Length: 110
Length: 115
Image (cartoon, rainbow over all chains, first blue to last red):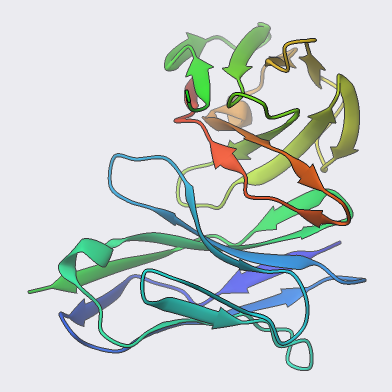
């Protein structure tokens, strides 16, 4: 079946540092790819998405590019803020079924 | 516009019992998905309902069943509860869009504890 693998956390960065959270996937066909974020005490919310190869999703300074050749969808941000501290989930939807990674906890220190 | 709501917030049951969890989808959304999230793990897809029909299912046994009503609200039923069923159960609503999938809006979840 499909699977999503995220880099293990937790990740701790200083404010204004560069962020990369790796995500690779295994799926048949052409899945849509997503990053979700869960802020402390809140529910899951969509951060960005890409629906076909080479698409770049972006939101709130975060970016991720759908790389079919490497089956990856790495999340990046050039300068993180304390308010970015949260759990980040990489996910795919393929033939109507969703698959999530286990999440990466990011802590940004001032 | 109201968001996705779930009830109850918390629930404690004993092994072997049955439980029903409820979800009200966001206004206008006709697709509802249910997920199980164990502590420290990502959400696991249970099933999806579209216009009152099951439209996809993950690797969960038949004792996990669901319903969707004409107003698009939904129920998740779990029979013969096991200790491993203890988890956060999430509901998400969306509007399907051709071969791609629109954003899913998640509810806050129901925390189920099985003793």
